[in-house]
Image (cartoon, rainbow, N blue to C red):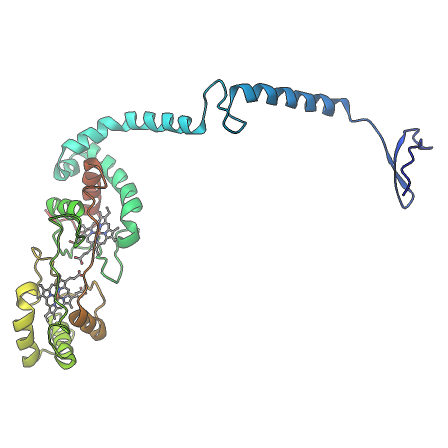
Length: 284
Ligand code: HEC
Ligand code: HEC
């Protein structure tokens, strides 16, 4: 294709020399408004580069960064909430719950802290999950549902090996401790009978009395000191069918919860305590 500029006969405008199937491209000048806007943008950019960070490693004379902007906003937010947080830090969860103003603040803050730190295991509404994550929204408590008990559980966690006072003893794995599969089956039936889900048997009761009573109690009422859950209700950490119960007896489980005392500040732990207590099962 020849690039021969010529003048278009119809419009009298010079062409660029480009031609497609007889259609020629006119070489009109840019509209003036467009050209001046373009120059203005260049001038604006030149000024911007001086004041704001734009080139790599160049800060700009204003010293502005998005990060410093964010820290300023966060700082202001901290200053706004700090008086309230100081009161929450200094009060007991029971006192917080008794003060409508503190309670409202703690429930809102506790909800956020719960979503960030706890919901992954305990569910968004604290409803728990099969596999050892207890519901925090019912009145069935392994360690206790008073303000003090909840606060202590959150602070030290469960079987985590990181806090010296972490809650929860270890249940023996009875398959290793010498019980036969038949005995474990008999025990699973006995556990079901404790909650009325099956008939009791003399051999089951005998095995239970020998191996389980110390932790789970005569009637399967559980033991909060040890963290041995109740067996005579319909609430199960690991599932309530015969096979799941048998697996628990044979292999034992050892649910773990981190210690939050070293991860969250005392105000947050107080807010979480008030929030969990209010989920539905709080005890006096
Ligand atoms: C990694 C999973 C995990 C996370 C995260 C977690 N928990 Fe737990 N939590 C558990 C397990 C497992 C248990 C039960 C342990 C057992 O078997 O005794 C438990 C037990 C509890 C209990 C005792 C319930 C009872 O019946 O006595 C409370 C209260 C509790 N968690 C609150 C919290 C709060 C509040 C948070 C967030 C700060 C949290 N947990 C985060 C796993 C977790
Ligand atoms: C040393 C104390 C101890 C002894 C002895 C013990 N347990 Fe446990 N048991 C526990 C603890 C603690 C848990 C909770 C484990 C967890 O949360 O991971 C548990 C959990 C269970 C569960 C699961 C409950 C649920 O909600 O899913 C069953 C079932 C159970 N035990 C049955 C038995 C039987 C049957 C025996 C006797 C053969 C027995 N246990 C002996 C401490 C004990």
